[in-house]
Length: 171
Image (tube, rainbow, N blue to C red; front, side, top):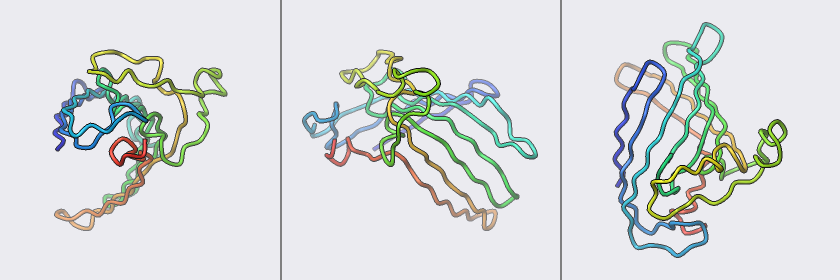
């Protein structure tokens, strides 16, 4: 059971608060499976470029900023409307969003080897900023396409780079 409240702080900044009841989850990768857990997380997304005639809208986001780390992940994403009925999104993610189909972090080549590895999130009860994990470790691509068939019907296809290891017992 997951509940999310998202609100627009400004024209470019949105925030989300998520409260979840999770069953069979691992607090830490490789740790024991908990029968159930209440979890909360807080996320931010900042749109730094609006969609133009040729360029997509672009944003950066950080999930689970001061939470337990179960949902922690960062991303850079671009979305483009190609017609009134077709829209596409593509991005690169880290943390949970870099766990399926991951590759060596390209930021490591720019900012140094510290960006190639990601330390474990603090876990525990949350309430701590894990700045040393943001945009670090393996990265992976994600994306989606939306086709608006009519005003009442839309078809969406998405590829997620989250392997859900904490939920399926594989972590």
